[in-house]
Length: 507
Image 1 (cartoon, rainbow, N blue to C red):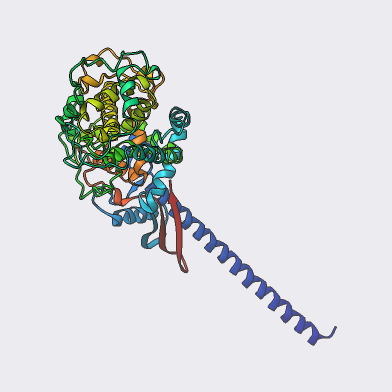
Image 2: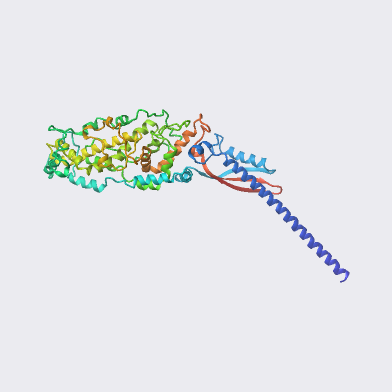
């Protein structure tokens, strides 16, 4: 090889080596940058983990729900972003630029989807799956004791009468024709019809005089007065009120229709009274986990708080059912709903009890002696009245910690039609072994408005977490600021460039 060719080869080799050195140095620098980015990403992840550790401990300890209060003690999101920046600066030598919270997922958004998810996890953690199955097993889907079809049949028997019936059975209208089956029912009521039970055992119980209409006694007591009569002596109401302007539910109440027309003057009122408690089983099955969770972590009238536990309301489950401002209001409304729930059950039982229906018929005949065409209507109105009185007795027992089966039987009937709303005879009643507790009946009532249930749970969590005199309490805590997941965008200046990193955190 001549000298010229050797020179070209040397130059070529020099160029190759130079290129390789440049590539190598570029790779080294790229690796250093990647290491810096990895270090920066690690610092950001550590900072985000530190923020996650700032979860509301009161809410978690008491309700097993993890959330981050972005209100941060009244200092707001800016304080969280500042904490992330400080953490990254302390754990690196980088220059940290702008830090911002993004992609926040709130606990109460999308119909409280995040709350429901965590409730499902809490039910497993607390071992409540069996409680959910037990609740479904006890109720057995028996949510329609009196169907609309059955009420249509009874209404047809009354010839479509739907008038205000006075205490003496009159309406002030033309009496029209007598009831076609009047004579047969007279024999039932007098005890001469064997199918009505023991001859004379019920129909003549009131003696030869006019039998008293039980509706008169019922009408003398208002629903509020009845709630007062049913109240246990050891019940204690909180004087506090829920600040509706500040809580997630805003105090919005959607009427579930659970009520009884205690005048018992019209068939339409009777129909609503005995069917208003129908149709809850599907919602109970679909929301069983949420319902048993509520029954576990919230208190009610029959189950006072654990020692050392402080709550704004004493009747928390009753608030979940009714959504009223105070314990007293929630108690009165809960009693009305429980009576309505039980009235349909007891009416259905009474219709199949030939002995007691014979007594009802006797009273109805006495009341309609001058207007026999109204006898079928008055008969069912009086039966509804008795079912209402029996339901009040049921609630009396539930409020005193007794258990009651959902379905009433002839053997477990407790009241005398001549002594309705007199509860002294119930003092020694033991209830039904294996029946539903007061708490479990409240769970059934919750199934009527599951859309509002989770918001009311958040209400109670918030007002309790806002107590200043409890460990971990924060008066500035608001559920509207509660998040379960969030993202963080951070601007980080490395040695030779600025990078923008994103990190996500959640519970």
